[in-house]
Length: 366
Image (cartoon, rainbow, N blue to C red; front, side, top):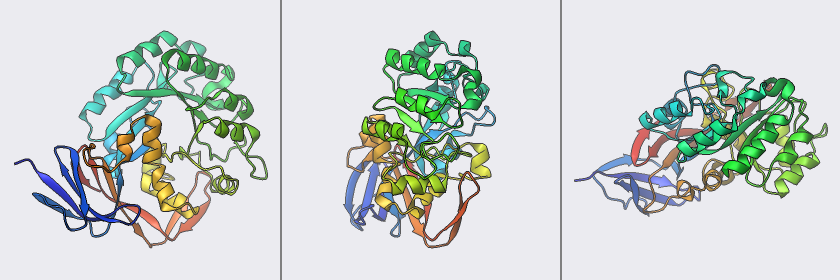
């Protein structure tokens, strides 16, 4: 008999108590708490269940240094069921990521770096010869089920003397391939006022809450006009916490002025997973609870909002018949120190802790 797993006595984000029954890799039933039947039972004891967490910005090629890590270390072991590698690979190495994906438990998608060398160097857009449109298009055609967008890191240390031209090339590649852009922002030049107007509906600004001098808010914390204009035309705001790209002060200013995230991502890799300030998706989500966002909005930032952007709404649902991708977590009242990318420390009174995950029907305890 095919195993029928019951995740018993869970609660949805709405606080509704449920059992979830999983069979043949799919959600077989969402039942009233205590009513699900099966061949194996995991007792949830009132833990929350959401659709599987999606991290829209990670670095998952372990051979790349410093920006690399093992897929499952930053995926299912953290309760994250789907990761999207954010430009670790250009055309030269995207096949390597595809091969690693086949061996991993975590679902993997990717943004293709517009530089064919990818993060083999951290100034991958400093030489315009490394942007090869033909190679990029060939890679997109070769891996249509892996590549969901194009990645361009537009900050001083990456582009050096190339200025805004790599982003213009990225825009042209976007038009040619039909794929949106994820654009990393950071220190200038180029000035942020040159960068943001080149982004269109469906493109992503990642690191939008960074505290660098070239950020999206003025000295008083008010959003720049280029930011409010971008939001109005449908540009997507992604957190992309990372080692150097999340400021509590900027995040508080953004919330105060109604500039809210679309998605919460970690920009996690080995160094900031082990040494901080990222550590885990749960720790990053806890920072947004600390900032005063409701739990439902925080979890939507890693479930429905991310799934909708990917064009995979089934990844954001808990519904009979859908592939079983779920995250189980609790809220703890243990005070926890949270540190941003600037070394600013805050104490959270409520902490998200992962307890387990289901990826394509397979259950893992965290």
